Image (cartoon, rainbow, N blue to C red; front, side):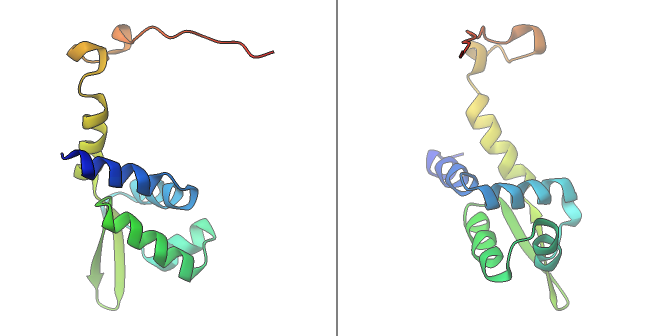
Length: 111
């Protein structure tokens, strides 16, 4: 993936309503959901919903398919996995981050 594609995807997800929309579509799987179902499930007004769906679509994270009179939106899992792969490809110096091979973290306590 190109860096610009990653930036667009992360920017689209860096907003609470869009993140919630994307997660709902991931849960729905390939079958997807209509805008009406999404709006009802997440309590997002239609005009706002339309704007957020457009942003996620422009970032390549979701895709609408017309079925009769309805638009069905579904998550683009290949693109999502590409973003995740890009972010983690050099994790643990390329050895992969298996459960026993995770980087050490420094815990900080705030009191």
